[in-house]
View 1 (spheres, one colour):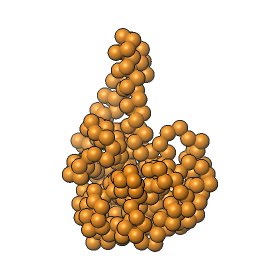
View 2 (cartoon, helix red, strand yellow; view 1 turned 90 degrees about the horizontal axis):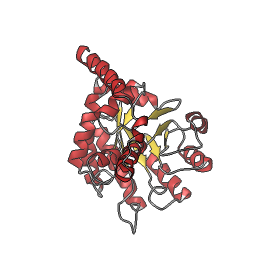
View 3 (spheres, one colour; view 1 turned 45 degrees about the horizontal axis):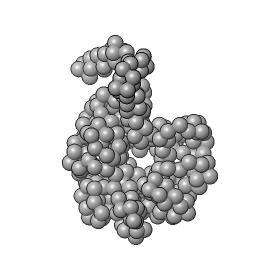
View 4 (spheres, helix red, strand yellow; view 1 turned 30 degrees about the vertical axis):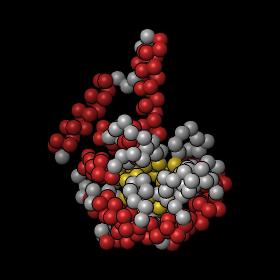
Length: 280
């Protein structure tokens, strides 16, 4: 098992060149399976984990989220990035404390959003958002500085799809010490290219949360360094679950099980995975 320091070094190197996909598991099983497929890093998903707990996205308390993050980190050999929502605080001091606690889980990276959760003003005011980024940066530096810090601007996700404002915020976050920049919800080549050009040479994460015109190769050509899928894998799993459950209750049929992954395949994978862990 690589050390925490080694995982963090690996994760930082992944951001230096090329483009990699960082999928989002929502429990140990999905994390181990994705690692087994050869992904070089993983990221938690606040939505996927919340749904597994019977909660809406954003409703998982900080302590439960930290326990989940630590569990995924401990279960995997590859670097893990934490979807750490808004840092579980409005004020910069609170964000700093939350970031300190997250670093203690052994994560290789973490992201902080600038969404406020207030429908009337869904983004934190610019100055406060920037202060929150600076506080997160200082907390990471005090913890050793090797955790990759991703600053997120959520305008395209929370009803404020203003490209100029998104670029202004991401440039400021980059100048304030963010290692990676992320604006979930970008859809067009123009939007993606504008964000990447604004913060280059710092790496940019692009979210693909559903069917997309872009391939990994397309996004790499645009200059994306990292591609995540957010809660999409969890929602895909829920899609199969919901379709079959409704088929049973509404039609009294079980045809949907035809698409299920055979239990023998899963048993074979996890038996080999468990044996490898037991002997390593």
